[in-house]
Length: 103
Image 1 (cartoon, rainbow, N blue to C red):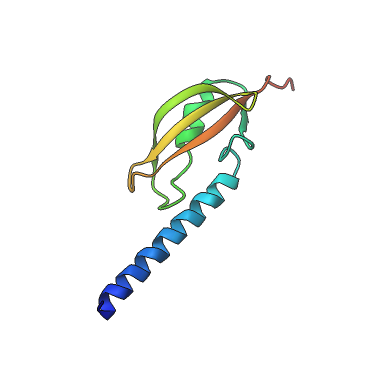
Image 2: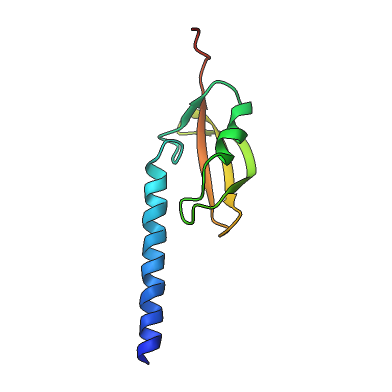
């Protein structure tokens, strides 16, 4: 194996490791996992909030693929599936409907 081939493979492994770490960090943010949904008071806010985020891998814009209501571990959540318009990465954002607060 040539030195160039070894260097390319090492770079590819480093990029894959970075992508895994960025995905892991994104899952720890609010809305990144079912355990950490974003509280909203209307289902109409799901799409707007989902596309307001950026891709955790390349910081590109995301577009909404699907918006569905699901029950996950007994909790009724809204799940927005988004994909990056630049790199194509897909991920899910989680939302929980809460009663609107009275000011």
